[in-house]
Image 1 (tube, rainbow, N blue to C red):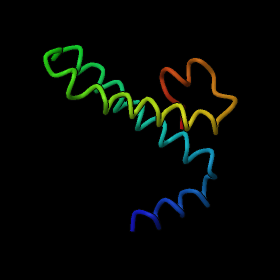
Image 2: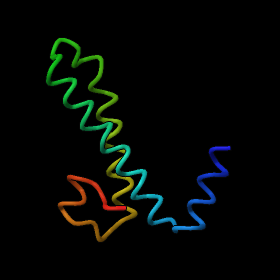
Image 3: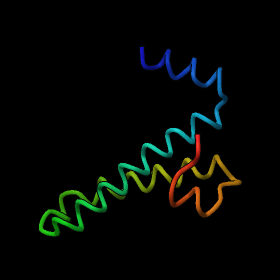
Length: 79
C-alpha cells in the first residue's frame, strides 16, 4: 500500500517533490537525533551511528537536488 501511495505522489507531483518531502522528514529525524545525543551524552555511542546514517541519506538525496540553497539544506524545503 505504501508503495502505491508513493507512486501516486510521484506521478502527481514529480520525483523532485517526493525527494524534497523525504529530505524534510529525514532532516527532522536527524535534528531530533542530534538534540537527543546532546541531552544524553552517556548514550551518544549507542545513537551516533544512526544519526550518521541519517546524515548519509540526506547527502545522497541532495546529490539528486543540485539547486538546493543553503537555507533549504539546513531547514528543509517548502512543499
